[in-house]
Image (cartoon, rainbow, N blue to C red; front, side, top):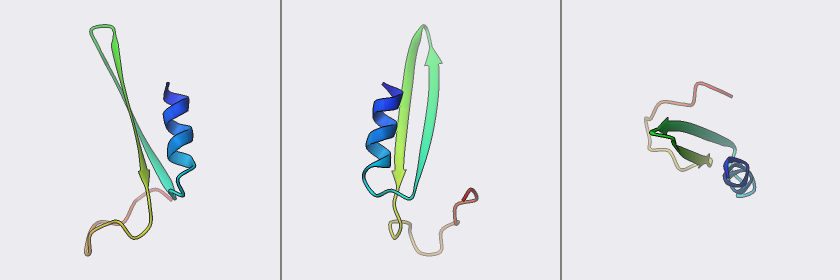
Length: 50
């Protein structure tokens, strides 16, 4: 499932992706965010990882 989410995020023209994983009570949570240029608010912190 993580691979499916990651592939989807990589194919939508995103410049970077963020992946968060968590587990609790034998269940997993996977969150994959696609980061696209021009969508950050003005004056926001630039991404530290390039």
